[in-house]
Length: 288
Image 1 (tube, rainbow, N blue to C red):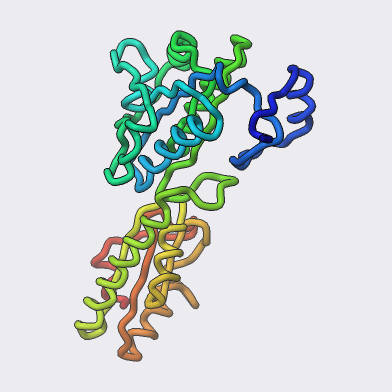
Image 2 (image 1 turned 90 degrees about the horizontal axis):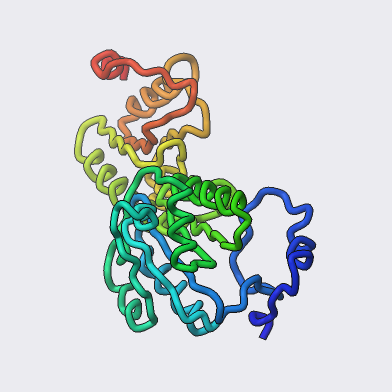
């Protein structure tokens, strides 16, 4: 099997990565693997907010490592990066196919989670203590920044530990990644809110349905919910600059639509484009 071929030397590995730009290397089978599977202890950690599909990913990693590659020891470190720091006293959990077989029926993360920065020195100390050769970090941008700090400490010590980032965020706001798991569920649920606002707006004279969605600096949830709904007239997102006031601006166009006695629905992110100017509600509404 191609999965069983191991890089023969450091030079063999370096020739593979030489000249590679910064990018997320897509997961999947390779012609060669770095570690002999029987010598590997793998670790899994989940950080940040909960997201639909975390337990599916944990189960998938464990099953693949055991049955496809023959890795016999997989450890789950509880409560995010805290699980890699001695002072928190979180003991790792031995993950086996039997233990993860039915976790897909449960919400959240079987390993629990936490937020906040931890010392990369202490985390690498923990990985070395348990003999971890591969660490799977499931999380969003903060988790991946933490993974980068771990990689830096590993490189400083010149030890052999692989760190794999698995992007997890409902916002879909990680560069170089087309779609993060949990995002589809997020915008499908957001679409339900949009549809409710549409029904509500239709029941009032000059009705306006205004839906404010999550996403921080990213408009992916708003855009996809709007496209899926097909009832949204305006979608205001931070990636695209727009004006509220002035000739051809948002409120002028909205006023024209209301004068046609139509129901209008807007979906927007709380971090709009740079040209967005805010006035208090009592100043805005009379103009409409």
